[in-house]
Structure formats: structure tokens, C-alpha cells
Amino acid sequence: MIVVLKHGVSDEKKAQLIAWLQALGLRIHISDGEFQTVLGLIGDTTNVDMDLVESLEIVDSVKRVTEPFKCCNRKFHPDDMIVEIGDVKVGGGNFVMIAGPCSVESEEQIVKVAKAVKAAGAKLMRGGAFKPRTSPYDFAGLKAFGLDLLKIARQETGLPIVTELMNIMDLPLFEDVDVIQVGARNMQNYDLLRELGHLDKPILLKRGLANTLKELLMSAEYIMASGNERVMLCERGIRTFSDYTRNTLDLSAVPMLHQLTHLPVIVDPSHATGIAKLVPPMALAATASGADGLIIEVHNDPMHALCDGAQSLRPEEFTELAEKVRAIREVIA
Image 1 (spheres, helix red, strand yellow):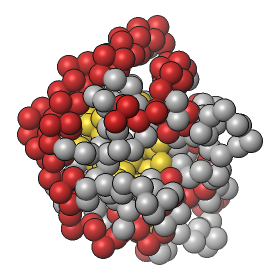
Image 2 (cartoon, rainbow, N blue to C red):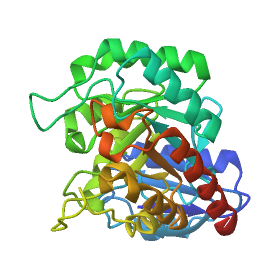
Image 3 (cartoon, one colour):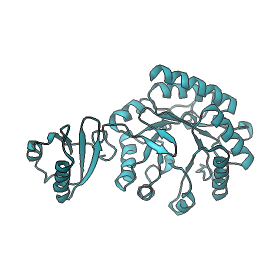
Image 4 (cartoon, rainbow, N blue to C red):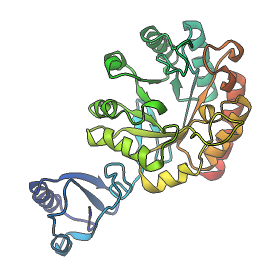
């Protein structure tokens, strides 16, 4: 249920209403906009007399929210969420490019790529230290040492780190990571999501291989209901009957998610297509669809990459793409 207050309501009267609602056993999510304040009532609202609340002098309207997700529902929070990562802002008109290799392989590699993507305009650096692989024989990342190399690259460039956490047991290693990524395979790892909800740290939540948008939003709800509202969603392609690309990039998810939620939406065309030549056109299409950012795999030597070289752009290709993305942004802004 949401309660929309009239413009100009005093803080005292607003506090009295909130205290009364909390006494009914409800948690209150407060969204203060420029022209109105929205109170999101979270919990069992069956005992709330809607007519009584709506009759109050300070209340403009009362509506029941039928969707199962509450914290991430745009009805509760009409204004776009802006997630701040140091000096970098994502969402609410702030567009960000995240770039770097699929996996961290060496200090020379990650520092070289980080410097290149920063020069091209990237604001965040991605790199995998812990890698979930389909085959147990494939390179699975440098793990803790890989995190150390990412921190060296951050020190060299100033770019905040985005990297994937696979296991709750490794959470202490991520204390100094700027953005924790939840991969597609872990989107419904609810124990992990609850733990991330106890952090004051941005989370990049990727859509699962065969999950609906409602399921994605319910996973975000797990994080937010536990206290962490700094969530960014990522569309990275879903498994369909396509036989020429790794996955199918669902760009219709971008405007649909913007209708359903106030959370920023990032698009990953690298994992969606699995083919480097397809990454630029899909990145431009994602930008035009209204995405709040892109996460692109970039490697200085894709032919010899230990992971996903086939979908990785070279630094010069990323530079060219970044220029085109900026041109698209100017058109749609």
C-alpha cells in the first residue's frame, strides 16, 4: 500500500502519521519528491482502514500495490534511484560505462586495460577474480590474488572496482570492493542476497539465464528488504532457441523495468551475444533503449584471453564504441 501526502505537509504531521502506521506493525519507506511525499507501507496491511487513512487532511490518495515486490517498486519510489559509487553516479540521467576483462590474469594485463578504458571514458572497471565456469577444467580465476590485482589497477587509475562474488564464505575478501556483482547463476541464491542486504555497498544484480523480470525484481527485493537499497539491475541476455548467439539480449526489458522500478538498469551485450562483432551494435541499441549504463568486456589480447576472449573488444574497439555511445546519448538526452 502507498500513501501519497499532499504538498506542503508539515514534518510534525507527517511524523505523527508515520508513528501511527508503525504502531500497526508496518515498516514505512519514505520517498520525498519535489512536489509530493510517498509513504510505502511494507508488511501486513490488511488491518489498515484505507478509507480512514484517505480521509485524513494531509493525505492526497491511498492505493494498494498488487505486485509482490515492494521496496523496488516505482509506485513506492516515483523518482529514479541514483546509486553513488565514490564520485560516480548511476541512474537518474547519469549514464556509466563499465569496462574491463572477463577475468583478471596478471598485474600487467589488468592495469593496461584499466588505463585504456579510463582514457576512453569508462567510469568503473570490471574484472573477474572468482569465475563461475561451466567446465570444472576451465580457468576459474585468481581468486583473492585477483582481487589484489584489481586494487592495484584501481590505485593506478582511480577507477572503482566491479567484481563478482560467488560464495558467502568469500564475503570478507570483498570488504574493499566498490561494487559487488551477483552473477546470473546466483540471481536466486537467496541466502547470498540476504547477506548482501546487510551491507552498505552497491550491488550489481544480473538477470538469470531463464528468469522473468518479476523474478529479477523479487531477487532485488531480497537485498533491499534486508536494508541495502543500493541495487543496480543488469540485463545480460536470456537462454532461448537462438543458435547463433550465446543468449538473446532482451532489450525490451530496459523500458519495462524502468516502468516497474526506480532502480538503474545496466545492459551487458558481451555476455548476451558472446561475439565481439555483435557487441557494438547491441551496445548502441541498449543505449538508445534507455539503459543507465553498459558493462563491456575489454581485453588487450583477446586471442590469448583465459576466459571469453571471443566476446571481448580490444581497447581501440572500445574507444570507438564509447564515442558512438556518447553520440547516441546526445540524441536521446
